[in-house]
Amino acid sequence: MTLYKLIRQVSEILTPETNSLYEYLLHTSDDDGGFLRTRWCYWGKPVRDFTVHDMDKVLLCFKHPFHEGDAYYERDGEYIETLVKMQLMYYPEDIEANIEWNRQLNYCFVYLIDLKHKTYTMTEYEPIV
Image (cartoon, rainbow, N blue to C red; front, side, top):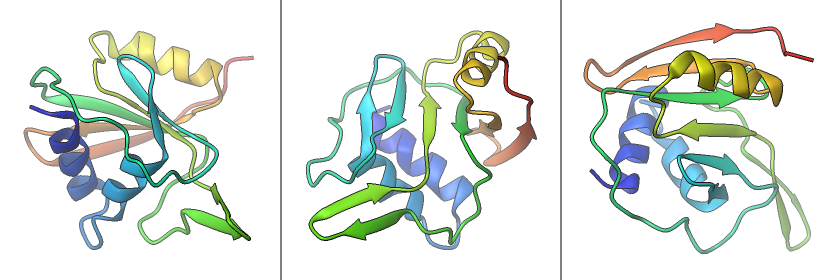
């Protein structure tokens, strides 16, 4: 599986009406080795595509609740700021440890996405301070 295919699957599950999450993740994410994190602005050049291992589940953690149709950007002249802050864990071997790490960074709205069944669950956690 490629990263782009994974992002497309996640987008189709979480934003089935618009598939809008796909372009957002492509153009606002940095690859940090095992996970993507949104930048603070839109980039014309997408994150690079590469092979990731096949998986059944991924974590997508948000700083704020996410709803399909939410505004993704705010434009200030040429600068396009990202409004939706998230991390996509594409190697979540230890899901509980990844949830705890995201909570420490205040990404407390945790979506466990089941790629096999094309479903997700969302759990809101308290931040770890």
